[in-house]
Amino acid sequence: MSTPITFDIGFLGYTSELSIKGLKKFAENNIEQVKDKKFNNCNAEVYLYDGTTIKAITYGMNLRGYKFDQLVLFDDNRWNIGIERHQWEIIDEI
Image 1 (cartoon, rainbow, N blue to C red):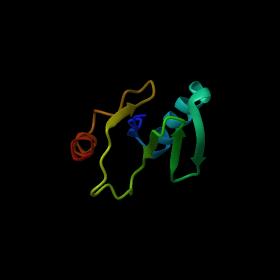
Image 2: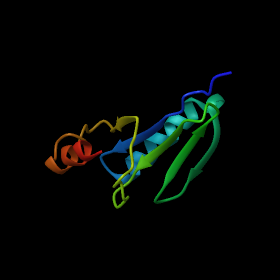
Image 3: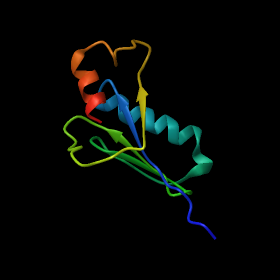
Image 4: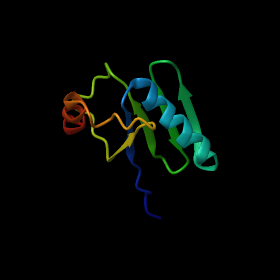
């Protein structure tokens, strides 16, 4: 029997609050796949049954040496995530 492939996924919003909100919505919409979840004001993580870990990327997180297999950008109806230069610098760094 082969070992399943697991992924580390990051959710990035325009603000830390949007990152966490986006991950909460993802968890609600995919509840049948969610094994566990942890949410607080500064951090949010969702663990799926297949071993995938999804983290909300919040400002102030130390991302040095951390590798995401996929990055999901989350924004609201203002579409602000790509407007400011520092946002693209953070996305490039990740």
